[in-house]
Structures are given as C-alpha cells and as structure tokens.
Image (cartoon, rainbow, N blue to C red):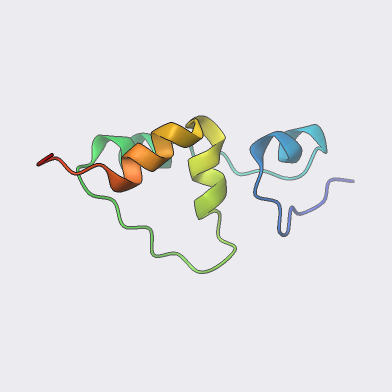
Length: 70
C-alpha cells in the first residue's frame, strides 16, 4: 500500500520509495513564466519539493535571487 510522504522533500526519494505524489508540473511552468512569484503556502505544503523536482539547485538560486536590474 502506498504511503503519504509526510516530511519527504526529495523528488527522487518520493519516486524510489513509491509514495503518493500529486504532479504539479503546470505550477512549475507558471512560476518560471512569471517575473515575480510568491509562494505563501503553509509549512509542509510542497514548496521545497516543487522547486527541487525539476530545477537544478543553481537554477533555483538564480530564480530566487536574480535581480533584473543587475
């Protein structure tokens, strides 16, 4: 029986251990298209997992801290 991944923040571990997973690919696509993105979801709601799922860490850091003016 599949388990609910409470506290799991790593996509690879989620898939390898066959936990339940809700695909949020469209959410990531929307975030990357926007100039500014504010994730104000509660703790343990998948913010870290969403960012680690498809983007390498450097991409996430640039996404979070890049200033368009320089």
